[in-house]
Image (cartoon, rainbow, N blue to C red; front, side, top):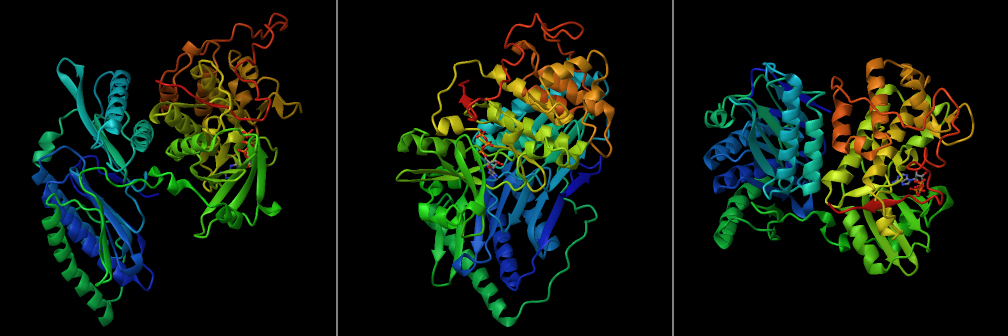
Length: 631
Ligand SMILES: Nc1ncnc2c1ncn2[C@@H]1O[C@H](COP(=O)(O)OP(=O)(O)OP(=O)(O)O)[C@@H](O)[C@H]1O
């Protein structure tokens, strides 16, 4: 995915990215819709709006283009307006044949695409900038202050209606650290929060660690920090030309006559529609305008208020007809069956629009009234994160209770990890990516989503792998949907252990509690502990891992795994801390405390029965338990 790095001494120029060349015959119509859209955005920036979105399409909703602008700081509206006007001009002149384009500036960004981009989280392309100055002082302390400040800002922005927050904190009596974060305001709180969590997690890795300032901008959210206050820079924004442009797509052939007519129609109609709407609605906000006579639709979905409906906001949008699911799965054909879990059989399906789905046909024993079932699906479907398998909807007809999920093509982690041949396909960097992704998914479930869901029995078979081997946690709201009795326990204490066990399993390729001696260890936690104080942790490492890896990194991950499985829950790091540790190689980790009953040099007779596996026992009925706790 494209990553643009701004030069260290330049935080003020605009940066842009044009992607996906228009190739189809309707290229001209699309381009003219882009032009209309950009003009529209530019003219609406004068409306004192901080953000704005619009959709322009030709007849029958063809060649639709979606676009938005956003001022990423609470600045003088005039500056925002100036920024938007300049940047719309810029992408319209530089990205002449691109289906999608984005331009960021210190004060605003403008973006368009042929996809509905408003309320989804996207992190590519990415722009980052780091100050050329290193922080002079105690870097460890500075990083901690920065980390806390950005996490506070993330929480504040996620819950603010404009999805924007800024603050400053004292580093010393006469030194302050300034920061701000923003999300596209059409994102849900949860999505804003996880987008920012991912941006924050990049600071120690891709960007800015130990620097006195830096910024990470995605299309959906961004952050910036510096030892200097920002407002000065904003008041003196240099609206200069962009730095030497990256490769610009070649312009296509000029349009024919008939197409020019279409352009004329749009150019004439748009100002008329704009004036009419402004006249009628005063505030300039309207939801839908369809001009049948001229066969052009202009849909503007929101102004300053969050009116844009996330598709999952209504229950109806989640409901599928049984006939639709039957058609998608070829009447639940045996060939389409991909597995069976504790809740029922799973089938692969393809919807009429070509979307691949996984269909979980729940066994009738999953007792839950229709209303509760629908409500729970509605709640769980709102949890969206790149590391969670997305629940797309449900089907409820007669005796049938069916859940429809996004289809994740590469099977589950255990399929690779515990197979002597297939595990060779998992390099260290892939295992690292999987561990980090699972941590982010759990962090979202624990802290970022309002529901605070705990996946009580997270195991490698619950981690599905997408086409790029990115991990996606499945089954995370099932207890709630199928109304499994929830166990009264302090669940925070459990999931840390599960995560720690999984980290050790991923590193070692060994499964806890199985029987074939060569592949398994009785208790992976105990096994890791025998290696740790003997200072031979690398012996834990799967010998099948090929390619390059750094011993330091592997040991760091084993260390984190051991911290998560410590006996006393209070000694275990929170998931936010774990995510931080996973991304920062040079942090001094606390020493893990050895469980008191592990007797490495003697017999195990004194071990209290059932203690070693108390928190990590397999779920015996094959049902994954998920629990919620309020906070
Ligand atoms: N969204 C999905 N995309 C692709 N395959 C899936 C999806 N969900 C489940 N599967 C596959 O279907 C099979 C059964 O999955 P399911 O989640 O029902 O059970 P499980 O996780 O194996 O067991 P349990 O229900 O006890 O946790 C697994 O092999 C899994 O890989």
